[in-house]
Image (cartoon, rainbow, N blue to C red; front, side):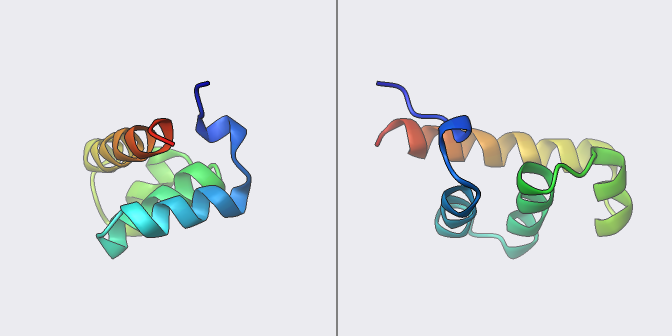
Length: 72
């Protein structure tokens, strides 16, 4: 059986981010994007990074989370 973020509660996603994403800034960005639904442009402004950089952080973070979650 496949397991995905859609199958997880908000607290489970938050716990997974805290457990598997080591960089504090990246954890904050992922939580703001995945849990709060903040758009890339707003995250770019909030964290003073380019939109491209934010997208890369989110993409790599999601890949790491998906790899860990689907192993369960």
